[in-house]
Length: 387
Image 1 (cartoon, rainbow, N blue to C red):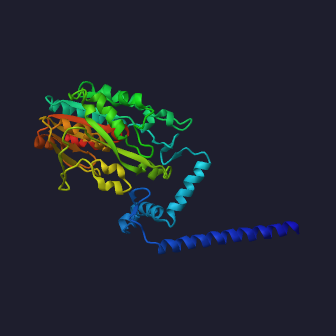
Image 2 (cartoon, rainbow, N blue to C red; image 1 turned 90 degrees about the vertical axis):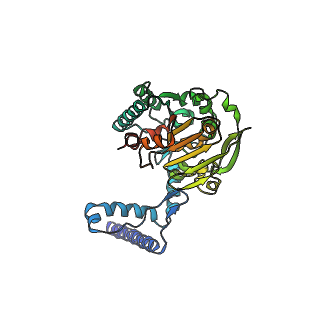
Image 3 (cartoon, rainbow, N blue to C red; image 1 turned 180 degrees about the vertical axis):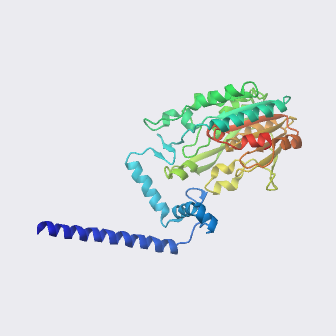
């Protein structure tokens, strides 16, 4: 009799739990119907998935279900609350990683170092070789910036294992040979590993990190060795919270300063032409971005395909800068030393570099990437090779 009573109680409990679960599912279903979809997540600084269009081909191929799952994940009612709860519980459980982002010491978030796709890397290096051989009279430089997890290893969480980015850089340097002149950012940044050379909540280097690197490589680029002393820095924001915080959901309460560098005693007049957007400005800085989630975009605004910067420099040199977003905060140091700087981001550019070389009468070329971007960039070889 007692066993029969226990079974009845167990069935009642299971029935109650099942009903409660079904009730919750119905409640969340109704909430998702009532709550309007959002176009963008301000917290994550990214566009959210929208309801996919149902077609016979998308249904049979499985594409509709894939996109619908992404839509449900992005538009789920109370998503930010549940996301914050998940991050908090993971932290209590001892997790030191969220979304491939390492939760480090001293409030640092560090992007994991990615391994190169060897086939893509081979194609990029062959394309650089070919491009350099076709323009042998033009000096070319390669500047790969290490990621924070490489330089600031003391901030990594305990027992964290990261890829050896120095070995990856050594491979690139070896395979490029004397095709381009190697500018060593690792050597420039390592002595300053205990300083604020990377943001705590963002994957970019700080203006200080860019300044130290420029100071170290200027002479190699035939820029006066003491030119770093021409600049003065000042903060333009004290409320920056970057992309790593947005993506991981961690350190969202950490606020950082953004500094910009400007020439101390010389004119800083420029005309910045965003070619595809057909928009011009007279500053290397876009102050309006300081009112947005992506404050790093204060450096030249959002990423775009081609930016042409004309300066008042006495120099007749014209620099082609093939780059990712790390270059945006580096341009301030280059501007006083080149008559013109043309920035090309292969991720957004649909033309060929030959067109740029001919149009702008380029005298120097600089490749400037962060390590992680360079090792997963499958656009560079196509842009250089004209495919």
